[in-house]
Amino acid sequence: MRLKKALALTLTAAMAIGTLAGCGSSSGTAETTVKETTQAAATESTASAETESTAAKSLADYDKVDTFNAYMMGAGITDEEFNNLEQAKLFEEKTGYKVNYTQIPDTDTQTAIQNAFMLKEDFQYMLVSKDTFFMLLAAGALAPITEYVEGSEYLKDQISEVGWDLVTKDGEIYGVPQRAAKNCAALGLAYRADWLKDYNEANPEDQIDAPSEENGYSMCVSDFRKMLEYFNTRVAKGGHALGIGNGVTCMTEILPAFGVYQKWMETDGTVQFMTEQPGFEEYAEYMTGLYDDGLVYYQATSNDTGVIAAFQSEMAGVVEAAHWEAYTLETVSAPEGEDLSQYTDDNIGYISALVPDDNKGDASAVRVWSGQGYNSICVLPSYNTAEQSAAVVDWMDKKLEPELYRESVIGVEGETYTVENGEYYPILPAFNDRMGYADKLISGNREEDNSKYWLARTRKTAAQDKLFSTINYNVDNTGIKNPVDMMSTNDAYDNYFSKANTDVSDQLVLMLFNSAEAFDLQKVHDIWVADNGDDITNSITEWYNSWGSKDIYNEVKAR
Image 1 (cartoon, one colour):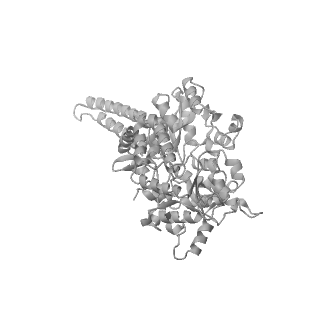
Image 2: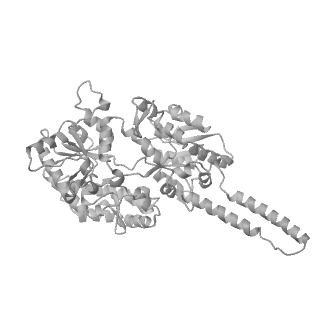
Image 3: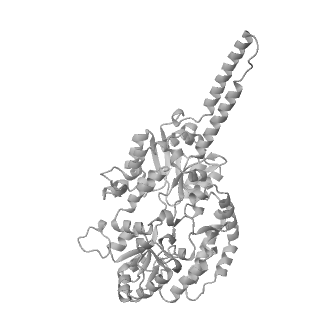
């Protein structure tokens, strides 16, 4: 790890200096010999002291305060309730630090944080978004914590090198990054498995392969369209086969079939936005064809029928669904008296992603949009005293002690969770009652452990587990992550991307889900360029090509 290498080099250099300084002449009288011996001993003592002074100290060696104040992201409860959370009391008992928590107002988080720094309010620790972190870093508002991290017991090893790179500037660490728990996809396509079964029974010579473990829970683009055409004959009057929710312009489960694996992707040395990537035009033409043929219902406004409700009422046969929506989808038709937490509906299935027709049935060809970036950063204000900063980092470090960390994020085995074949499962309702706010008090992660513990939150119901497990089947080998999620502050991206993304998305909605306007890739490109798209692309590409951790982060390569 970079921290260990830096420390080792420092110690080696100090030892080398001490060795050279201790060398003296071997000739001369006894008096001279004694004198030189005395001088050598003194020099060796000095060198030893220099070595000790340059060695990284343990956090235990620093003077520290025993109480401080923390400014936390809102949890939707009162500050009194927040301070009395089970995890808050657990941390106080186990770390020895009394921490007073105040929640950042949800109404204007950015302004509240800026004011806290500007007015030097009495907060020694804050949890902020990645964008806010870079804003504060640029303003010189953050305290460097390198020496404390180097002296930590857990922090330096439990945060990945990719994470430390993100929060390092000019060789100094300015925060503790908090990584999303798991490389995973959150969205998949829910479809009526019973209708597909009916189609196959009626068409033995023209079967559509159902998504299964064998094909990576995929479907090829031609079969998907064929399925929609049949579903259009089965939906309730006024319905459409495919429901697309308000605000959705590009479907991440369909794009991979056309070679668009992420919002930003490197192609021939250039990191391109999705609409600029090869294959996007073919995707758009496919989607336009579905809409023009009456196979798509687009929820134009939030007041229109939601796609989940449309699916429940059989007004749609396929919709995009997040794993936390599976319970709502699957239990609507559950027989009376069923334990809904354990109920799944065999009439509903899930598709992880579409694949090209040439890769029909090939599980190794499946690609899903996944993500595992660092969305939050733990920071210390530059006006902290040394004793306060040492205490805050020591507190964060102690919270990562293995047993304490496990208890703080998933509770106690046999009370809030069980372990089955090495996997963690929640005990309900105790898990929800006691661990519902646990993520609000985390400061950095034991990243490998957390990827296992967090899965308990996706297993709160059998339906949620079914959807999540299906769309993330083999995700470590199929998931493509967005490199921009790991990008540090970037002037062109920060200043221009929000408008460019909005303008392009608005235009795509008009073209893809409105028969009055045909799809025109050049028009989309012109909007992108007019909104400084080329500047954004060039700036991201320059960063990406110099990013030392890109090979570590991009574990799955598009094939």
